[in-house]
Length: 123
Image 1 (cartoon, rainbow, N blue to C red):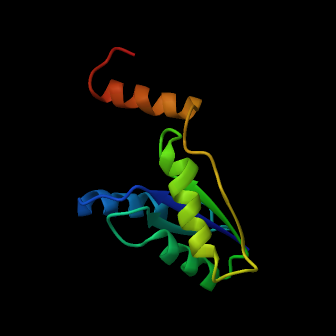
Image 2 (cartoon, rainbow, N blue to C red):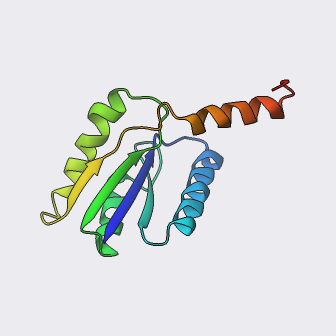
């Protein structure tokens, strides 16, 4: 069973954290073959460890961690892998991997264009 842990930075704004959870719930609903849990890297629960444990409790034997970040940086290269390593220690039989962040994608370009159209840009 594959688990997907999608992690954002976390916010002091509860509305931002709630929106992230809503996005993850919609993602989970459209991908029923995956076990999906949201996590915040810092500032708010659930933590990466909380979400990792929840996925294992739900039967995940492989956890794919996706940083919900636009660009690569220290959080992607260092912080998230370190937190995942710590979260995985109590689960020696569970494999895990961190994906690249969102990065460059034609879909990202479409989202930018959609937002610009919504603000009245003549696209």
